[in-house]
Image (cartoon, rainbow, N blue to C red; front, side, top):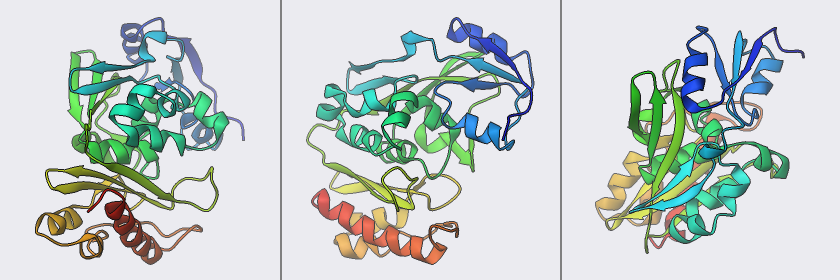
Length: 273
């Protein structure tokens, strides 16, 4: 289909993007476009103004910053997947980016666009939730940092305001802590039917689930069971507690709950739990 009519502006800076977003109540940012443009073609999204930030090269980087790795919001998935620094310090982010879509998507789509879109079937939001990552946002009131656990608020909804721009994602350097991201999908380029991110932490693990509810979710019951001394198999049996997975042409809700338990067990075993 053809998108509805819209105006188009190219932002020269983050501050310029914030100003342009203020010109329309339903303006949207355009980065790589792989999340927004399909919705516009189906007319599920009909913004009156697109603000293109894809040319802001200063938002594309991966660099160390103390105990964290800072990732610019406009860093392409391919560059995240192949970053030597991420592979050394926080490999789960690079591994998840490698599993996004196909090469065309990875060379065009951005980590910030994926995160800001807030799709519960996306890979990187789940990983950021498991890592307790921080997201740096700039808006009319200045810059602020939002923890990943507070960022995803509903289906395709985030804590971003109408004039906010996500500028940076900050993930911890894991040191010797093991981590993994396991994804089940029908074809290599498909969205996850279910996926699990697991990060070893303080003798236990942080576990997050993809496509098991309206937002990426922490498997808190499984985390608590592991902390109480349960093994991988016992903790994994609780992975689907408190979730509300969808039923669609790819899988029923019950099958997704089964997958969550199986993948959580495998993920915990992979990180030595």
